[in-house]
Image (tube, rainbow, N blue to C red; front, side, top):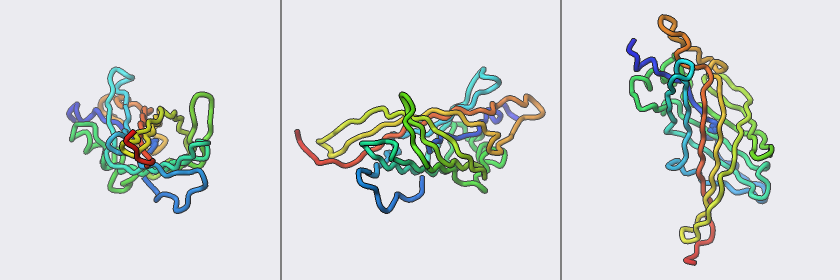
Length: 212
């Protein structure tokens, strides 16, 4: 097998989001809540797979996803996030490797076309928040906790928008989700079990427009 094919990684993340589309937004929001519009052009669901004990790494991302964020600006712990990521959209910039990742050796996209995350609780812990919820990947559902941090807000009255940023970083063990591929005839530990997931979410809400 050619070396390029062996530079595979198993995920996601991503994500959390993984963060990580969704379930449709809630039909009714609680008082004080607002549904943010997540900007996919400036949102990233990325992952890094260490190669051969960290001698190198393969980076990738998912290009097709839907994220819904319901925000309570006065108390972020009353907010929620839901995400659906299309596994077939995995992209590591090498077509042969991406085909391998989509195969039954990894994501098995024909059988499991989506991975999902739905938060059930958000807690404030020190300098960050923790979104706990059900993460589904490769036929397995596990409750995970995604640590995330708001990166700030920006008001653009000229465009009638307020911008919000969030980032999350976590690790996922691919074998916890049945993604057990190894190169048994060469170097079994070529691809690490534990995958780094990095999420950057960029969202907006409409506000009153002003030229000032």
